[in-house]
Image (cartoon, rainbow, N blue to C red; front, side, top):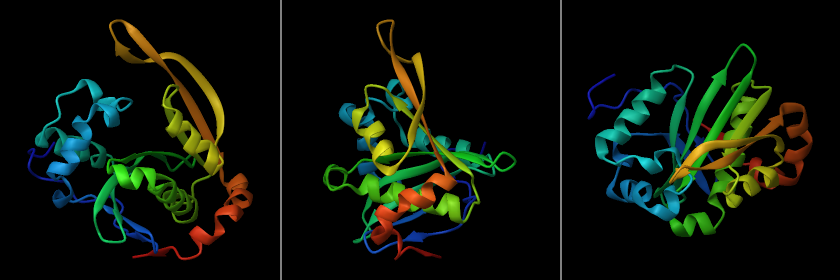
Length: 205
């Protein structure tokens, strides 16, 4: 692991652009006071893995570097049309042999979350993974109490494939259940039609 103030170079050096937002590899500039405040906000981090950790600048650097230490994984920043950093999106698994991948998303900016930027960013990363990474299946997971997260997956077209009981620590010896979702490339070909207007103007750099 590199020292805590140094971010490893991205594994996936691509920018995903649309009229509404862009997805770019995470850089040091994105780790701002706002970003740290998102992760410390109990309303935002309620269902995140880091909710039980002390959030510091080195902690975030180490998380990004830990992800990028696996050459198939990546951490992207989500920027709106004004180039404001509003959240992150992650490729958290990429099995090139079985052609299965998974992603996670965080919209930290309140206005952007309410405006549906998590939905738009998810469409862009899913289209990219199927089209450019040649994946056959994308997985998503979330805590069962996180209604907005699993509702987003279902709106996009994911199917619930599993229910894992007491899989995430909550507090005081209580646990959350988790849901596992999946989306096949062959199903996406049909489901993407209703999102066509959002996908036609995607550009890659």
